[in-house]
Image (cartoon, rainbow, N blue to C red):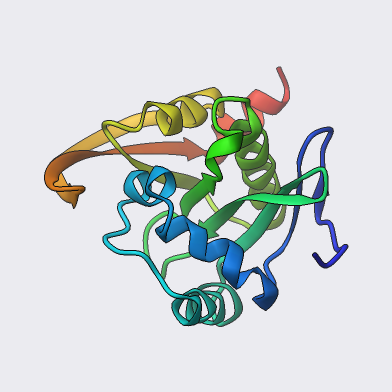
Length: 178
């Protein structure tokens, strides 16, 4: 843990990802409760998790944070910046913290941080049709379902639909003034 908090809430905080977080991030592709909803085809070893930090966090324009609760890492949130199209919101949390509102709170902090610091018209997020929890997070944050790609991903032995959500800056602005 770095002690460097970027966003501090009542229950969760967001801090920068450090190389020491590789073992924690490795869990995202090892634990089936995280790996399958993310669509990660295989577990990573520690070297691959370190490479992820080097390429996706350090050598990119992506905005990435470790989510902590009570000074313990419980998840990962990221806005993945592309050369084209809308940036993509990505998040996952360790299973012990599922269903308790931590995801909505942490992803909401990242969305707020993003719109306050980056000039961008909107965000998108993709989820698999079977991932009710992720869809719930997005809907609670004000994202709108924009489309569906039928059987667009092969996950855990089956083709599944990918559902796209979007949030425009003006929608985010309007939600802050309510």
